[in-house]
Length: 281
Image (cartoon, rainbow, N blue to C red; front, side, top):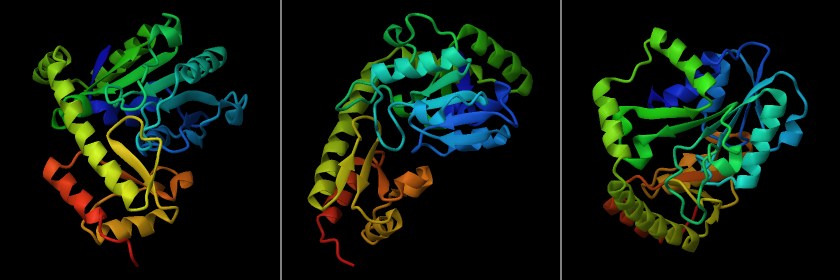
């Protein structure tokens, strides 16, 4: 394992740090956090959005595959069988598989499984990395506290490059990470808090005509009114409710919005009350 300056920094620079460059292809989920695409472009690589390995085909230019479970923004959880197939596909072709697992401790309707679990890798980490963050698990967003684990050879390469590039996590932050990772009580407390907000918002959204897609894990509700996402964002904004348009996360998400569970309890309750107002033009 290697400490990182949060997970976003690693997501953005990982292709470059692993030697991905012009002429190479990075595969990212069809609907996903924008930094996967940014990281590939920083490396000069081509980006392919796909949730299907069949659609990717036998392209020898593919060097890295990003998976994200639980997903930001959709909250989708990939089953063990899917993870196992992706890892096997990558190993057959010498493609590095990287799983962003920042929300792995926040399963609601499904129990997320790490790509590094034995039932996925068979105890062999070769060609596989997992990215984690304490921002969500432990409310340490301002600390920039993350880490990457997996294939010892790949982690060794990252260490060799990162220490010369100055990507070193300060010792006090690492000490805070150790303390947080050794304490599960605060994680359980956070889960209870997020679960209550989730139930309140989900109920209010459904009653006001939204459909909730996936959202079985993570810190967000992936909601749609079957209209352009910008129209939904506008409707919500008129009620003082901020949501992220699905278009931020990929062309196929243009009818969804991402609604976060990270506001205070009081603000979530206020948002739920405002959602009870009729949605009229």
